Length: 433
Image (cartoon, rainbow, N blue to C red):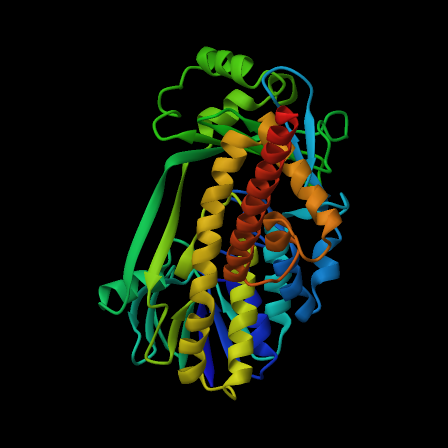
């Protein structure tokens, strides 16, 4: 059985590790040069947040300790208002649970090295998919030496939001695609280490909420921070002069300027990225071709679940192969049936979390709501669990998280109504005396 995986990024490399354990012959095809020796593109995200779902996948292939050696745990959000003190908001009721900032490159390299070392796995770099016959498993790749043909019994597209496999399936009329672009772009900036130390608290994800826009910062192992600006479409084009850039940040992000000596250079030279949610139907065809991760269902990054969700795809596909006795023709439709509702749920929750991070986290009302929520978690352990904890610190299916949180909110609303009615009744009785 020959399996071709298009895309040797995070998802494809992890998938190769899982399939190698089944004794399959796996070839990874990657359009880029070997990332272990190539330079990272300027402006490309260098870190990500990994939480329980991603860690669960890494544990299954014995890589979690290696990957987590340089991870930086973030136990909450640090809110940076325009004026006034910083505000730390813990992610968990106990205050000790954390999501982990890790180097995207380090994680990719660890997975790619593990895949390359596995029996039966080979990797072909600088192979860009340009043709696919999904029914026959025939592929054509553009390489520096010219076009190369290949065949496989199973073709799996793990090549990201701009998937070439998905593009070929679209051209064949096999899948339909809808991309909901967010009316926002993003640009990355950097905060270098200050005298060899972190310039900000490395134990938090830092947020500068500004209503219609925001910025976040994650710590890196070299004691720098990667900042990401999320601004409405067109905002970056409207601010292009160095003096105007400096004035804008002095007014809106006053604590950033002293920490980011390369801010203007980063701003002027780093590209503006786009944000969107990819919906694809179906994800698989012919019992031999399928899409996984961002190639099937890319989401916006505001829950830190992109890589975690993709890793969970790999775990679920592996489970489906177990449940079908290794039959790809049965496993691929089963995989889609089990995962679709969950990926749609996290896509929805990621968009909701953007609104929360951008508009609500600095609000006193929001802080009060979080305090009440944590109080309920302490009073009802295991029975009331916040959405954030269910998403980030468990492997509860995303769709079940959405349903459970809805039930909890209904209970809260009913309780609030009952308490309000009781208070009103007591007040009326007292007023009659």
